[in-house]
Image 1 (cartoon, rainbow, N blue to C red):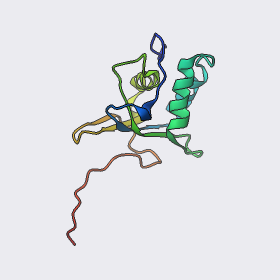
Image 2 (tube, helix red, strand yellow):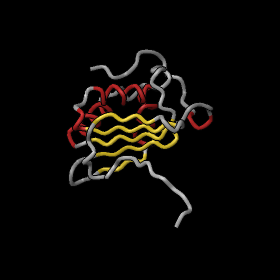
Image 3 (cartoon, rainbow, N blue to C red):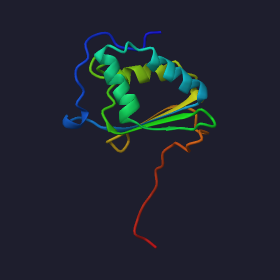
Length: 143
């Protein structure tokens, strides 16, 4: 299964570019976490594309692992999660293609965009050990 886009990768300087930013989280059960690790381990270590992908997934994300359950949680704050340019964002394409091939009960993906109504949810792994999810609530200064 080829999860990577074809073509040249351009350097990703996310923090220096204007654009649309999202907060993104991905919770994986043990089975899915092992599959994701295997995919990352089998990438061509010499390619620039692999370096970009691994940097984003392994370094840029806030990651948690539950050693007891084998679950993994990745959270990226204020990131460009563009799915329309696979040559420029191979790490997004790889992650999106990976979760498309998972059963819903193996993962929970949440992306919250800058716009108030821009919330994307995929998967159904709400019973994860990280209590990963999202909240919408009213706030006020009423006592």
